[in-house]
Length: 313
Image (cartoon, rainbow, N blue to C red; front, side, top):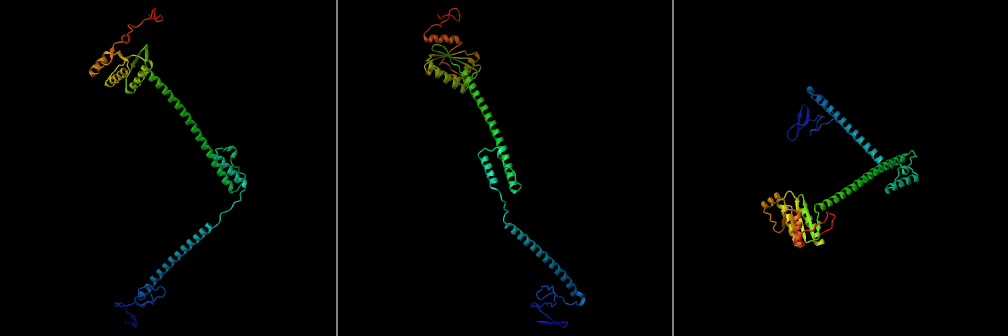
């Protein structure tokens, strides 16, 4: 459809709106940046022409900047690609210089490196000399580290030796203390004495029982005197150890006599209900020795004439 407007043919769109035929805007609403119609009434066409011109300039400037940026990126990529494809620079090196490096590394690996004689001589002024200097620096630092580690190991070995010696000394002292804590003394033929001093715990009671039974068997003793004069405190646990010791002595066929029970300890044992009826208890070690002689049928203990150095009678 067409309508007449001011002597011009104006095409109409399907919905009845007019389509402007000005060269600035076509029927579909797109701007035409090239040409503009002359100014009509009120100067509207002139103002739209100025706006369209500024937008076109801005668009052209942005397009130019984008093209410049893409060109710069392309040049950078071309330079990078050409440099990456460039073959590495070759350096001519004499074979003896490479052999010296081989000998140095072999000496380091075999632990035969000597900084005074095995370092590489720097007698050239080229890029390979920098590599030789770096290898020398590495060799010196490695040698210093190895020396420090060897010194540390030597000190540790010395400390371990000293510690082993101390442990051996402690073990010898422990064995001596153990022997002193369980001194089984042979008073007479067939008579052994076991003086108990201090506290009696489970470990000490076991050692004491083992030592006493072994001595009874080896010496064929028939009487054992257990003197508790040095015991200042007794409880249920200690009394139990004594009862087991007495029972073990009787099982191997020896008479067990307990001497030296203090009144305080006797009272404590009575309060605790400890029964020592399985063993004979006497006041002193002398009375215990006399009881052993009576058990053996030897009468009174023999005495020496004229003092300690006299003959027995």
